Length: 275
Image (cartoon, rainbow, N blue to C red; front, side):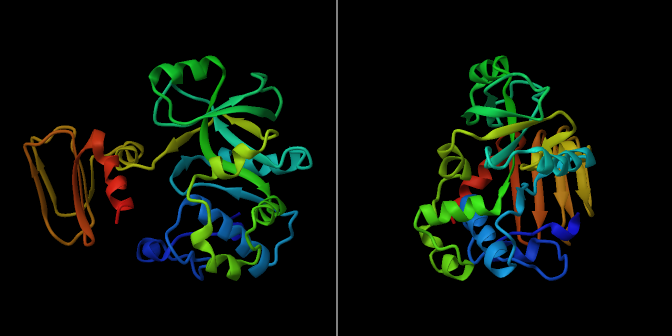
């Protein structure tokens, strides 16, 4: 399966991305996920010469799943009627009414079928709305979706963008800055969602990563004392001592240092986006 994986990142991530041999696609700038997805599909179409009938699967890099997840993704490709449903989303059976995930509300709660039509998207609700979503049999939005390559090529044409990759790169500043859900998916009323009930974790934050790894220290040259609840990661060559502080996330590398309350560590993304 790895032979059909396309690694996508911007120049700013080149030094931190693993080397898997020749990189088939490199975005010219760090754009929104929407821009990356459109550029990637144009690259597949014009540079790698894939057929418009090819089924494309978008999967975020920060998911923690088991092999069952990918097996179900492969099975979906042959069970979906692509002539009636241009996009298939993967929804995860919720464990609790959490506020940190988006929700997909199906048109019908009958999941004896492989897929159900999507009735509504709900973006990261508050606690009360999250409970209401679960009462309507909503699923967590995994950020994984499938469609034919021709679907995106048609979207580009309909919105006045070139389908040729090199031309699209030159016009990257024109690409929508909003999310793929808003820019593309919510324009269609015949989307379908497949339910997944296996292991799934979104490890898009340091705190979630440490929870998945089930450890409080990663790296070398670390000494901690009376620092209950603090997670420490050190990939630098310098020694680190953590004394008498609780519930902190402390990350040190040769590129920078982060010290934050674990519950507020995600705020760092806001500052990085302002750079």
